[in-house]
Structure formats: C-alpha cells, structure tokens
Amino acid sequence: MNRTQTKTWLLLMAFSLPVAAQTSNDMPFTKDSRAVQFQIGGDFTLGSFQGAAFSYKHHRQPSAAYRAGIYIYLNDTNTEMNQWTPGIRKTTDDQVFLNAELNVQAVWYAENTRGVLFYYGTGPFLGFGRYREKNKVIAPLIACPQSESTADRERTSWSLGLTGLAGVEWFVSKSISLHAEYGISLGYSSMKEETETANPGTGSRSNSDVTSTSWQLRSQGVRFGLSVYFR
Image (tube, rainbow, N blue to C red; front, side, top):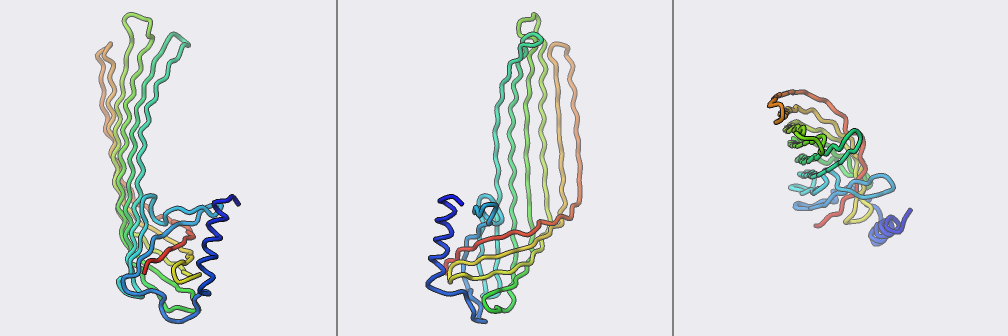
C-alpha cells in the first residue's frame, strides 16, 4: 500500500472515530441530502462511480434519490512514419475518438437495519460515439511520379437503454458510506461507418457504407463504492 492509499484510509478512519457505525433504524438521509460518489478499484484506488467526469446523488426524500453519472473520453492521435525498405515510404495517420455516456437512475431505500441499508433502482442511459481516421500513404518518395493513396473513415454510434441495480450501503460515519452494488442493463445500439479511399495517380476512388444495429443484455458485475455526503 503506497502513501496515497495509506492517507486515504487514515482519513476514512478519522471521519469514523467521532461517530460509530450507524445502528439506528431511522434513515440516515434527509430531504436534499447530496453526495459525490466514487468507485473503489484495484489497490483501493478511487474513481467516479458512474462516470469518469462526474457522479452525483440527490435525495428528494429520505428514502428516495436520483443519481447521475457522466462519462466522457476524448483522444486525438497524430502519427507520421517513414519506411526505408523497400524504397522510402511515408505514412501519416490522424485519429480522433470521442465517447460520451449519461446514466440517470431513481433509487429507493428499504428500512435501515443496524446501519445497513438495502437499495434498488432503475433508469435510462444514453451513449454517443464518434471516430474519424484520415490516412495518407506516399510511396516511394524518390520516385517520379509518386504513388499516393488516401483513406478517410468515419464511424458514428448511438446507444440507448435501461439499467437496473440492487445493492447495500453501510455508513461508517455521518458523512461517509461504503456500498456494494450489482447492475444489469438492456440496450439498443446503432452504428454507421463510412469509408472513402482514393488514388489520385490512377484516378480510382471508392466509397462504402456499413450500418448495423443490435440489442444487448449485459451484466455490469459488482461494484464497490464510497459516498461522501453533504447535508
């Protein structure tokens, strides 16, 4: 365990000392209780519970809440490569990848049993993905005329579905809880890919379109998390 992990657990213990684990049968939440949620990963590292950018919970009643998670991933890669065998060949490749997903769930809590609360919930998710690649090859560089070819590929995808979840939450202090949760999702996805290739030297050009749709029932497995509440 490294220093960062040690400090994290010492901080949790410090929060836990003033108040022992909740044993009352009353709900530990109030109307408008809010929490930021983190997922406990390997080696006790912390990440957001439902999304890489943001994970948040808001109670509209002591026994009911809304949760929202946003996942965003963006990657832009530019590659240039020169090959000397055979001849001198230059390849440039530009790739842009964007992926975003929004999860929203309504969560209900059962009766508090010695500080351990059972909860369940459901809600929609919406995902969007975009990928674009531009590839250019010039070979050989020292020849006259040169041979040049290009390829432009673009893929767009959408997903929409419903998630269901069930879990338990245990308060180690008034402001911090640990939880374990199992989830399952049913979703519909659609993908379209367009590709255009060209060779100016020969005048050849081709285009292709690929479209696919699918339904998927997927287990999200068990996730372990930590919530920090602001009351």
